[in-house]
Amino acid sequence: MLSLTFVFWMYVFLFSIIGAMRGWAKELLVSFSVILSLTILTLLQTYIPYVRDVLPRDSTALFWTRTSVLVVLVFFGYQTSNITRFAGKFTRERLQDALLGIFLGAINGYLIAGSIWYFMYEASYPFNMISDPINTGVPQIMDAANKIITYLPPHILGVPAIYFAVVLSFVFVLVVFI
Image 1: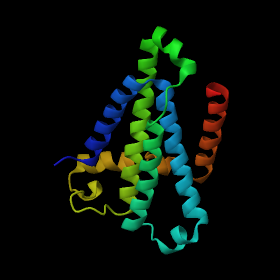
Image 2 (image 1 turned 90 degrees about the vertical axis):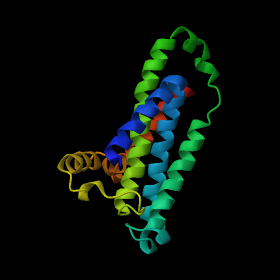
Image 3 (image 1 turned 60 degrees about the horizontal axis):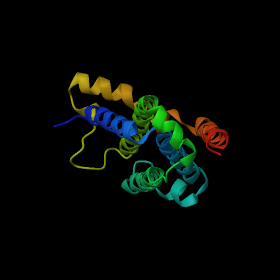
Image 4 (image 1 turned 180 degrees about the vertical axis):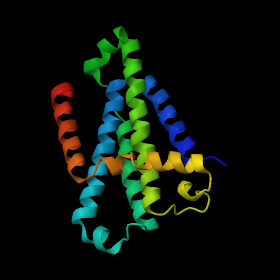
């Protein structure tokens, strides 16, 4: 049996490899799509009465709603077209592009896998095959899970921070990509 901590770090590593192959510009767009999805989820839970009042925070339906919004926006973030403005630079600076892609890919793995883990945590782990790592009885797994859960993206990017993240993302897009 694998712990969620191991699976989390495995996905961070996998996304860093993907980031090295795709490059920093495309990975940055994926990061922005995750930030956008977390913002949409915050707005849904704050201002949409059905999501706010009817769905309990620990429900499986809320877990699937959150995960679906995240996965759909991440999917479209990965379906980027060629960014022709940077094409000439990338051939000359391939090593720098790959290294920054590794870093941004790892951040994307943290954002995506961490968000899904946090959604499972808030839904009280709605699957039979996935157990709560805090209640495993193994002290090392419990300590590692407790430390990671406090640093998962939806927990860190709360109500004021997520709005600043969206503003910074749009400023970056306007300055660098346009």
